[in-house]
Length: 495
Ligand code: FRU
Image (cartoon, rainbow, N blue to C red):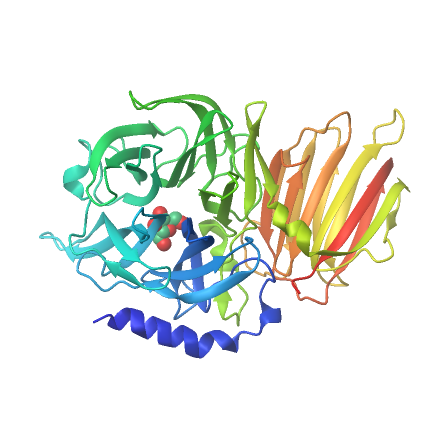
């Protein structure tokens, strides 16, 4: 009956244990085996947080999409569950693409996902259609809905593409009804977000368009999310084929946060501010949930389509989730901080205050490691502006990942050129930061195969995947000119 799913479950059960725990990140989720991309179905269900993901267990390349599955109570310690969906129906036989989930009043977990189906057109070309489909489950096993698909080409506005119609994000309204946003390619061939409504989560109809790219912020808008945050309405989208804009948006697949106001009765979203979500190299397709205590928590795929060729040769898993982040809005901008639960796993504190660096490079006793949470405060010495500050991470004689800051331009540059990948992909990214009174704060979180930088208490975030061998664990600090540095470092231990 569920042949494809049974096969995937048997495969992951048999081969998942072949990957030793120390060859994975300790607190970032990786696929049970094989390939992972977008986070899916990030939701609260019966007192726990569930996270599904785009999954192809049989290789470390993207393939016909399944949904992998895990759950957590604290966003850091993940319990693996068997794969939840496999492509096994006429409407999703070429893939169960991204989607989301919500707990229904009757205690069921409702998944809404994109079914992909390819067929041969009369002119000999292969045509793909994408439709929105449902599955109902109990937190482990999910049954696809007999009336799938529930949203098809017939539910699109005029000119909407049935080929690029994907990634529904569902939520429940205070009045008990349900809404979802979904990405679509409108008649102008760029990107748009459509809004649908349902009394019960099962029967859906179009409300209208929420916002659109008009070719300005990339083309097809993938993986939308739409939520209230600190009195503002936030629209997250992951556009394809973006044009670069200064140091704010890089070319290719990006992440865009649009903050505005929303008139629900009129379905009118008015933009007030637009910014990148993550300024690093590896971050895409983020999705949020509302935690039990009201926090808006976001998780993203800590990879990017433009860099997936950079994988190590003999890996058995590829793709990892970023550290979940708490979102807020301050001064009209998006603030992102690592989930506070991380602090429970901090061990072995080491702290240095007022370290003077004067045209030199230093190591600090006990400041090293590959599973760490480290905060740096960097400030000029007196009036003189220093030329450059550099922190080198995951370092040995051969490998190093660096973060460099130049106060004269306010540019922070992350460089993972020598971080274990020999692929000719993007290895550096620069971002414009805004130090407060000349003080730059950097919180750096390392978890074996990644570096996530949070600048100035969450004003900006930048993530990169690294592939450096674990023995490369040294950390050093370097200044051209004179500056003063504070360092606080903890090991993260998942005991
Ligand atoms: C985004 C995406 C989605 C799609 C999924 C397929 O990374 O392209 O639009 O649903 O990945 O795996």
